[in-house]
Image (cartoon, rainbow, N blue to C red):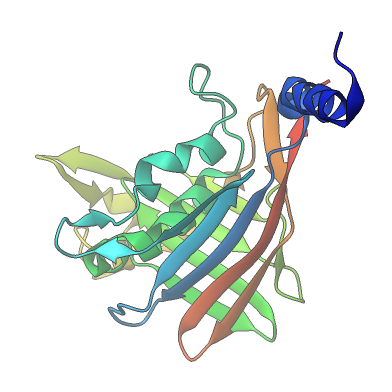
Length: 224
């Protein structure tokens, strides 16, 4: 039998370890991305549970310095085995821009527009168009704030080319910036209805001198 203070502490530790999987693994986000020019000050700091990661683009390797590109899949999916979306695909994509080369943002026609404090983020990646919109105070809701459309481009020799019906008049089908958004039918982009767990917000978006910041905590929810 375990007795005394040491026994009590040991018992508490065992209980904590046993209950740990039951506690929510929330995600903290702190992102900075200059959407107007290449900027070495861009970063993505994030944490999942008690594990924190500070990351940015590593020009030497051409990848994220701290491995966020693959590690963030723990947030993207409910489980590695099922791979059901736990957050909008567009939000996952947004998190990767600070840890990617500047050419990715330009090729994807990454744009940010504002109307007061309301912010709209748009980009086009591999034939998918993504739109993330905040409320009037700049708060983004992962359950309702994202939309997307697919099938807008064809893969031609490894390069994505916009289908003619989606190109602006006089535009270049090889440039995602020439997508005619008025011809795009957007659908809700949210967590999978089959996800065993997912994340809810809100996240605070802000823009200052062509720099987009995203901050906040995503709270883990589980299916009952």
